[in-house]
Image 1: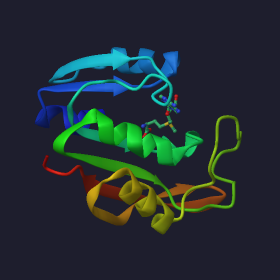
Image 2: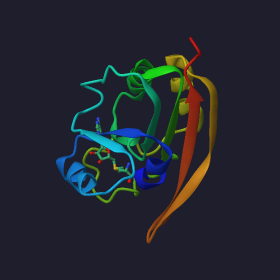
Image 3: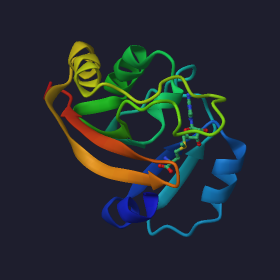
Image 4: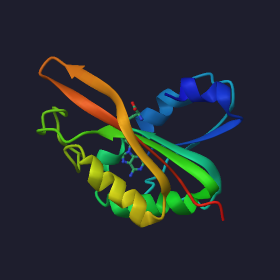
Length: 150
Ligand SMILES: C[S@@+](CC[C@H](N)C(=O)[O-])C[C@H]1O[C@@H](n2cnc3c(N)ncnc32)[C@H](O)[C@@H]1O
């Protein structure tokens, strides 16, 4: 995903608490400035003013999603936006090992409600893709929303 974003921005701060994921990322050549932060975003929120927060297939690993939306809201500049892709509700078969899985996907209306309660505006949800595995197909949605202008 970062390869698609990098040509369109001047800098990216990539956050992941997994050393192995960060090691893979650090070897990539991206056409923008890249800062990697190895932190648990729920425990060490970053006090920076970001233009946008983009997440793909990560939030089902976070227990308290309502609190995460509030953290994201505080991290954004006025009028900044979120684009969050994650799984629709599934039967638990998406992950073959459930370690670290906090949600078997999400109900889209519940996801929108968390965004609204955190203060986000212009909340939209659309189909993003379908992940095809040998044992099933899994819908992925994309939520986009904005922080207010002031
Ligand atoms: C399924 S992977 C998704 C990776 C990538 N975004 C993608 O779309 O392929 C989920 C990632 O979220 C990271 N993660 C989960 N909970 C996290 C947290 N609380 N703080 C930071 N990273 C977290 C995991 O370490 C893992 O690398």
